[in-house]
Every structure is written in structure tokens, then in C-alpha cells.
Length: 178
Image (cartoon, rainbow, N blue to C red; front, side, top):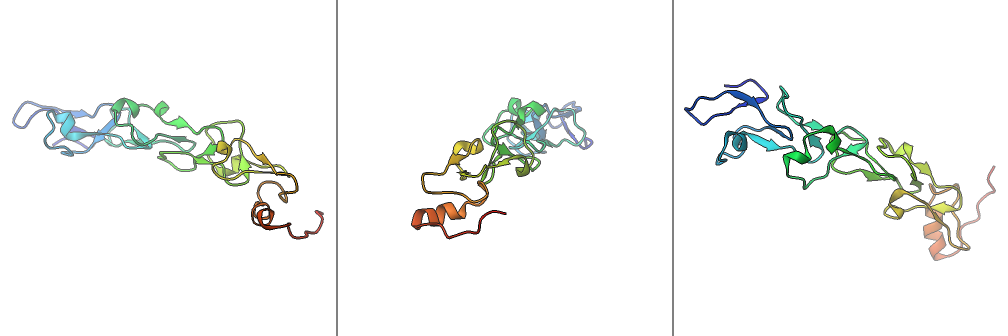
């Protein structure tokens, strides 16, 4: 029997030793019993949002830190073997969770036109007055100008007036700003 984080390297009845899974994989004993080698039988590639540098006494993968992600669909150990495989969130995106497979776009009414690796939606800036942004528009990197005769009160954060009233008639009369 091997200590936690290792598996038996040889075939049953053969001379063997306890070894770590290689980088990019974690111990998952007998996850594939028909595997042709002890490694294939006992080591599994880390999943989305995780990596392993190998030689880890826990035998587990490490979650990508906040502000980074590692997408699903990467099935090679080489795609999960270093922290650098966890990409920084792109401009206009953030990630506040460990082990993410994707970064979220800046929220409605906010944007980011510089900086990567954002860890909170609070790092995105509010669209300035007269400009707005919807989810999926400009990938979170810019705000759009209101069309002629339409406006957004207080910047991009208050989008309801632009959409509901802008599309179906004039906006309601609002008191002047203080």
C-alpha cells in the first residue's frame, strides 16, 4: 500500500515502488482498470480549472487562483502541468472563484479597457453618462453611446430607462441631478 499522493508503479505481483503521478495528472486509483500501464490505471488528467506540477503528497490537482481560468476540453496532461496553464482573465472579464474554467464578462453597465487577471466585478468601471453596455456587447471592453434622443441616467449602471422606455416611448420625467 502506498502513502497518500502515490500509486504502485508495477503490475500485480511484480516488483514495484510507490510513485507520484506525472505533472498534469492526479491520483485516482483504478479509475481506468483496463489501462495498459499502472500510470494509465491510477493517474487521471486534471479537470477544467486545475493543474498539477506532480510530486505532490496529496495526489490532488491544485485549483487555478482567482483572476485566472483553465478551460474545459483540454485533455492532455501538458495542458494542466503548471500554474501558467491557468490563463489570466482577459480584458473586460474577471473571475472571483478558485478553479474556474472561464472568466465572467464585466457586468451590465460596466467595462474594462485595460488590465488582465481581474478578481472582482468591482474592478470593472461604470460606463460614463450617456453610454451603456449590455452583456455580450463589446466583450466587456467598451461602452456604447446612446442613440440620438435616448439617454442613460447616471452612466451605464441604470439601463432600464434606456431599454424599456427608450424602445417604447419617451422616458419618464426625472428630477434634475443634485
